[in-house]
Image 1 (cartoon, rainbow, N blue to C red):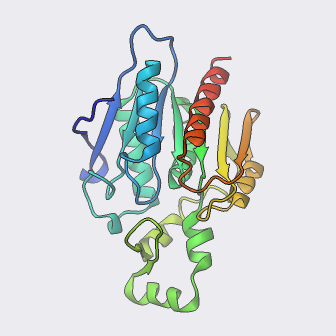
Image 2 (cartoon, rainbow, N blue to C red):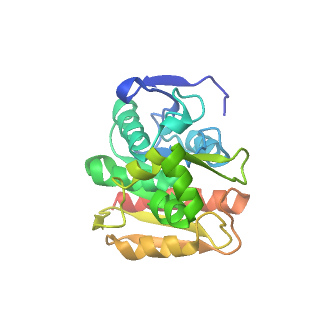
Length: 258
């Protein structure tokens, strides 16, 4: 895989989104494109995104990875963004730079955003693979987990800092919490009328496997499977997990063609 500078897409409300787009080979069998949607404060240079690009190049598949606004090499400040903004970014860039049906691969927060896209652009979605999907986490994990002091600080100062195992503390804004309430996907019926494969590690300290089970119970569809990987953590990036992600995309591709 060649390490090249990203391209940029003029996204919603002037947000400038960095992306890498791999074009499939003309001699490859026809197949949907693949779009990787990363997690909260993650970027398109992560292990899973880069691995999938290398896989797509080997397979001759169209593949898109990108940074939401406030993430990676895209414009804006992270603290100014919210779930709805990042879902708008994802929809706009998919509509703007890809053609035809797509298989979404959503990691953590990207799983939530993928589910929003499945509601908003069903005609473009051929299938879905989620990796430690974190739907509704601003409400069910962050807000529900705040103590009285943190809730008071959020109201008083408009933000609160949460420790992170991945570097600097996460700055959680009042807007992130409040705006997220308009993006929840587990409170109303959610139809997924295409092949879906959900992957979840049992040793995930950020998204408990109960979230995956709740999502499996909630969604409606005829071809939905959940795979639990004993001992896998939230990164889900060791060689076996990466191979499972590839296999899941291949399975969804095969099922989408039926």
